[in-house]
Structures are given as structure tokens and as C-alpha cells.
Length: 466
Image (cartoon, rainbow, N blue to C red):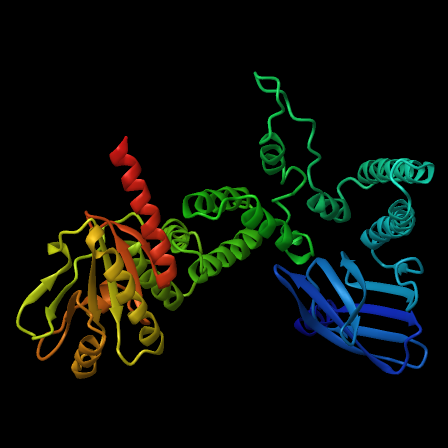
């Protein structure tokens, strides 16, 4: 074959998608095609709808397999699955699901078989629920409606079971299985004869992903993926670092053989827990950084991205809750005496890094002063550190508000490295340390700090009495 013929052959073989849409009830307007990916939907293409309701989406491009939508304005008209680069859909504005006819791909035949059945049953269910709500509990109408709802639920279960068997191996079934929630059986009885009250939650969590295919990257491009993962992380796990870290590792291990799913999920978790406002959740970010990115498990990262992430991980790692805080060395207000955090002898130490010109500091510092006067006799000390290099305003603020705690800062020819070691990118920064300078909590407002101190005071009193 000559080079010219080969070039022509390759040109004609170039992938091109063609999505034809006919929607009765729309004309002379614009339609949009979007695709699902992780958390949201994103624009893919635009096509004009002619006077007969016809639109044609076509480009020299390949559509990734997954779920897509056709929209007019901001209104979604229908979803569809891509398993073929040439598809056509005919439907109506008034009944887009029931009137749908598809060509070109087997998956949409299955998909709309399911949607049409479900749509019809949902209408019946709505009518039965309305009848039940209007009926007196215990009446014949109430009993009949309840019985019919139960029978309808069973009919749907039988259909889904049969549907899954008939179309086993299809992406439609994979998608539907991913949506399913586990059915919880009756809880077992405890030794005292009572039902196990924790059984339902434990069973639900343990079986939450029973039907989810972690080997199919196409699920990322559906409405099922993000909602399923988010529900598991946010609703089925206690929102504390250790539990979240275990949940992250569990899901990422399930996705080890699905590169795109793994990539999306790791990136999503990393961003989520780096930015989380929940106290201490940066421990999850550090864990992901040290055990995945910095161990070569994120090959998509550029050198620049890796450098930035690694620096952030190294900055946060020493400041995690449960670790001993780095020492902090500054000069006193007279710039003569050296002050060290590790020299402070107190049951609890509040490290407060602030600036007199910071708006949040102007509001928080008097509140901290009020709290300090209230709790200093109970073994609490404040190590207040000025973040500025010019100290005139800082000293004026200290004197004006009678900040009678330990005050230190840089100044003159002295420069410490506390801004780096304490990750001071904004002020105020508030940390609560125990007597061994281990971090108990951090980056909280003053009311939260007061509540936490009260909790520790009560724990101390309880231990003393025991």
C-alpha cells in the first residue's frame, strides 16, 4: 500500500461521533450535550434544533463511554449511555422517557427498558401513597393502599432481579448495581434477649458496596459514582482523622486496578481533606501525601505539582494533633530576653500567633484575654507571639488591652523561623497544648477553645476523684 493510500485510509478511519436527537415539542432553539464526571456534569457539545425538532451533535472526536445528558436551556431533557459513537434518539417534550426510541447502541435499549418500567411504577406508587396519606390509619382504604405499596415494591424487586439476569454483563446493569443500597435483615438478639441496636448500621456499612464494580472506570462518568463514594465517606464514617484515613485506604485499595477511578478518587480526597474545616482532618491529607503521592502512586503529577504537594505535607506533618509541637523561640517585648515555648510550665498552653493589624485578631484577642483571666488559675498559660517584624503597634495593643500573658516576637536583628515551622499563612493561629507540649487542638475560635478547656477540666477532675 502506498503512503498516500495509507494516509487516506487513516484519515477516513478517524473517530467521529454522531448523536442524532429528535424531540417533538421543541423547535428553533439550542440543545446542549453534557457528560457526567465525578462530582458534576460538564459541557461537551452544542447543536441547533431545527423547525422539526431535530438536532445533530457531531465532531471528529471520541465520546468516552459513560452517561451523558441532553439539555435545553438549563433543563435536562433526558440521559443516555454511550456505548457506540453513532446513536439516535426520538422522543417528546411531554414524555421524554415513555416516548423514547433509540437506535445505534444496545445499552440504551436496556437503559430505557428499565427507565420506562420504573417511571410507570413511580406514578402508581405516588397515587397509592397519596391515598394512604388521605386515609385514616386502620381504615380499609389505608390497609389496601399499604398492601398495594408492598406488592408494588415486591414487583419492582422481581423486575430488577430478572432484568439483571437477562442483561448480565451490560453497563446498564453495572450502573444500576452501583446505585443499589443493601437490604438490612432483622437484627439478631443479644444475650439479654434485646435486639442489637447497632446491627442495622454495621450491616448497612459493611455491605454498602456489595454491588459496586470497582474494576469499571466507566462508573466515574455516571450519576452513581460520586454520590455513592461521598455518602460512604460523609455519612457512614465518624468524621475523625483515624476513621477517615482507614476509609480512604479501604476505597483506594478497591480501586487499585482501575487507574482512572483511582486517580479521580485520590485527587478528590486529597483536595477535600486539605481544605476541610473539620479540626484535625489535615491528618488525612498528610497521610495521603506520604503514602500515595510521595511513594510514586500518582504518576500523573508533574514535578512542579509534586514539589508543591510535598512541601505542604512536610509543613503540616509536625503540626498534626497528637504530635509534640515544635519549639518556638522569640524575644520578649523589650527585645532582650529569649522566650521558649518548651520553658513554659503549665498544665495547658495556648499558643496564639497574631497581628495587631489583622481584623480577625482585633476581634479574637480581647475574647482570649477574657478567657485567660477566667482560666489562668486552673493551670492555663498563653504564649502570645506577634507575627509582624515591626512591633510598635503590637506593643501598643498589648498595653491597651492589658495582655498579661507571655508575649514574644521577632524584632531588631532577630529573626526566628516560627512562621515556617508553625505554618503561619494567616492570623490568628490558635493551638492548645498539654503539659508535654503535645497538640490537643488547633485553629479554633475562642468560644470553641473555651468549651474544649472546660471538657479537659472536667476530665482532669474526674481522674483526680478516681
